Image (cartoon, rainbow, N blue to C red; front, top):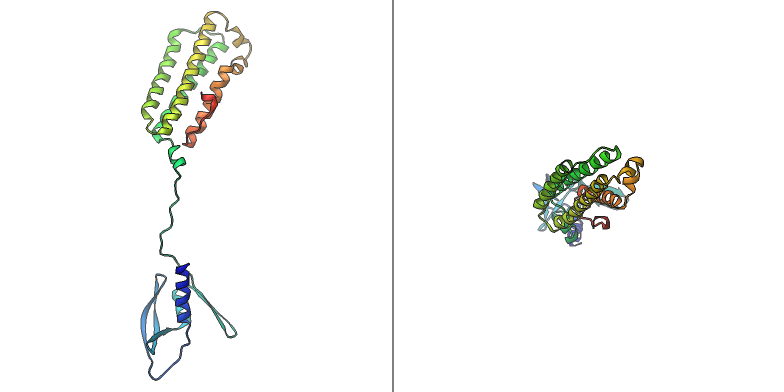
Length: 229
């Protein structure tokens, strides 16, 4: 507000009547208004300086209009203060995931998905399942989980990792359950019904948590989800 009042006061002073006198003198000077400059004729009289309104408006990129005895001068007043930077709240800062953890987390989700989808495909098609075959998928997912743990560098990363580890534990439990069912010849129901695996409560938990983890890692912000506990 003070800047605006000062700017208006300067303009009112420059709007003083331009009069001539035997004691007046005129000379050209460089006038600077709002960081814009130009050559103008300055009239010196009685210890005061006067400038032509049209020249003033041109230099300041303003406008001037006349309405009877009324003169309207419009000039933009610019602030010298730098633009304010957006303030990051403490909450948004502490909930941000690091780029390294996001990459490792996405890779781990991909490994767990490959593990689960391959096992489901084998059971639904009635193929035999061997411990060595399952161990290979499990080892890859275990290595991916270790990489995500190493990449966790912030509080948000570490909270997200707890959910990622919970998903790994759920997939491992689900995998062990299905392997045991296959060994006991109790896995025929999965081959007979294509929805049997998907409707399994543990399978639903894995799917919901994977969906939540995918959204969280894509957004870059930690989000808690009950399905990952």
